[in-house]
Image (cartoon, rainbow, N blue to C red; front, side, top):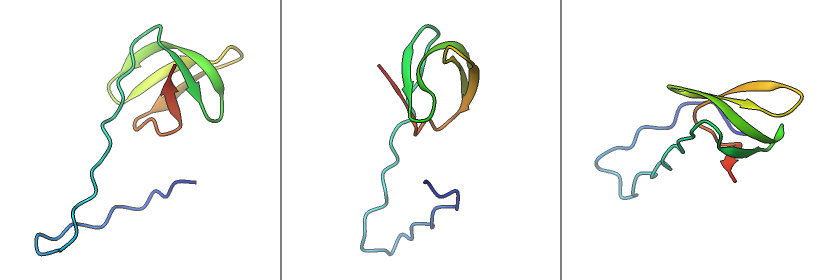
Length: 72
């Protein structure tokens, strides 16, 4: 499982490079997606910071970042 704790602050004097955050994937209506928990689905709604996906038996609002969901 992923942790919900805040990331430690990167100090300018640190000899290590800061972690590069992966860009947040953008979805459009009618995109086919795969979710780790719900399976395959189709994006039916897009709003800032969330998408609504129809997985057949249920529609689920998935919030950003979409770590468990990928476009097919």
